[in-house]
Image (tube, rainbow, N blue to C red):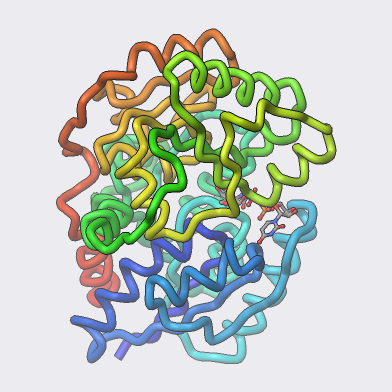
Length: 355
Ligand code: UD1
């Protein structure tokens, strides 16, 4: 029996972990056991606790309660806590997801203690080192033993950085597994008749009043022009900054809500006309649910969606946002082919068991 330590900390990681935990408990419980360590990076119930209940993920065995802080402080606290737990237990490997500070701390602590690190969502690159996530991804990949790449672009990025073939596994994307599994389970009822779904949480958008203002006013114009409303689940960071910058918006077009649960997000996606976001995960979920997406960033790691014509990059530029909305407004769904076959989690677990 292999003992796996799974490290999570931020909202998208709880969602990704659900896919893997389910496969373990349903099919491989004899071969592998999993303990979950929550760093505490996200701590509000709407950003953390409720995902464990809703997605039926085993409760974390450990919670470091690290909370918010500067990148250095937050990562250092996690590193210390994770190292302690690894030293006082016997694990055969550590599983980390994506590109957050929790990912980096887990990978770094484990690799220094000579434990194999398994990285789910490896090989993603924006080629923009101003993003904290880009630094986290690069460093995590380089200390990982097995790199589970969700797309062929990710595989190629790893080859270009000199990784050998024995470390690279094209697994497909566990987020596609999840969308296929959970889509029909949503009971979300939108408060709005016709709406676009919008989210913003990246520091380069929330921490610059001009960018934040430009995005929100472009969305407002779109709502007027297309006679629709904007459903805007609001991330705690964005909420704080809207207050700090005293940004007022034409409230009649915006329906601000607390962050949505995972099932509600899938329900909202199914009912929305279109999506505007700077989130990587939501870009993909929009695509998997057949909804066009305007990406509020200068670049994306998920280039396949743009290549397929289902999303457009618009950054925080109002003209580009309006132009992208116009181009995509009547785009029909396309069939995602680049993200695997919906069985990524099983491929990953099988590989870890035999590693
Ligand atoms: C983190 C990840 C990002 C991921 C996102 C998903 C890093 C560097 N970034 O960004 O890649 O897309 O999670 O949401 O790891 N806050 C609360 N309550 C919470 C969580 C956050 O109030 O439960 C507030 C705090 O003021 C905090 C701010 O949000 O300072 C930012 O949180 P943090 O975890 O540092 O980064 P995210 O922006 O959530």
